[in-house]
Image (cartoon, rainbow, N blue to C red; front, side, top):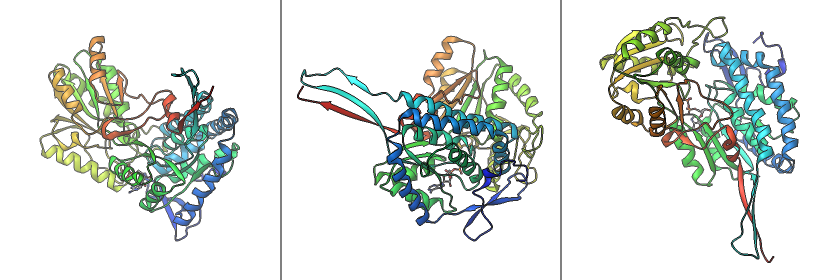
Length: 475
Ligand code: ADP
């Protein structure tokens, strides 16, 4: 941590006390520091203060809110290097990726500062001449979020920025593995002039307690969650009692399809970016590759050759492309999936090595069948199982044969096929000849059991707004 220049970013760190969360570096196992583990009473207090703060915040104009958000955006970018280092130290991703995430995370703050000025209502043609009909949009109130460790900054700003821009107050519980980034960006919001009580971080080693508290609180009007489908289901069940609005960004099982007319070099480039960034630990990572029989051998040869050039190591070191997995459980899961795949008949084309610590070599598996567990489960690691396919119809069936529906990717140069396949894939997002598609201007989200709601884009603001219908009678 001695590499961090702006020490105010670390102001939430506390001494080693009993009720603290220990933050470790997944690349080395070293302890980085401690943050508080908040009690139920402390979190209830935060919720109560957020409710009060929201009332006056809702009365500000979108322009006033935008001015503060723009200052926050600028501070995030001014502190990009420090924030990136904190992120790499606690999360493990290569420094270049962390810098990218800071910019990506900040882009939501800038976008929603602009977008909240356009939270238009409507005037609606009246069905009777004595009435006039209009709608206005209003903030939902207090919004709470539970966020994962794989994007420690962006998963907070992608929710906090639209909430605050809309006139809500916001409380986030980040993953216990990556609380330092969450506190650091919140400190910058404070320095940007955001009034107290509007952007709050709570940390706890008892995620279940926090989830129950958020979902059952009558003061909280909205829950936004990014994480596993399993926990999403729990939060939706818990939110039913108080009929809360929910946004859910859940698991994925992204197919990456290479048709026989694809530009193979472009497909390999997209495959590397989609599969191996963040060591394969993103919900939009390509999970399974379907490659047409006619180009299968050529694709695998070029793909494996590129994979061989990836450097595994501590993300803080220059030239590292693939960092550690987040913890021992994550590594055990990846190991199990590779072992099962091999036992079921898959061949390791490259990789498959269990390295020391939480590292695993980038791996390509061939002779993979659609029914194998490595294809059916979300891998969340640097493993690429490659399946051979023969015709478009059975391919689409296999691609859609999952409970998930987040991201999907395919490579083709045929315009008719591009539209047919893009429309046939049951996914919230489709990348055509592109392996990395996230941007603040486009709606991110899933269908089926990958979630509800959209983040980013024009749609992302609606998640934090209620529409009110006003009827003027007796005219
Ligand atoms: P992952 O497997 O990526 O860690 P999780 O869904 O388990 O995904 O975790 C995402 C977030 O959900 C984290 O902040 C974690 O602390 C939180 N979480 C995990 N279990 C629960 C739960 N039962 N209730 C509320 N939050 C939870």
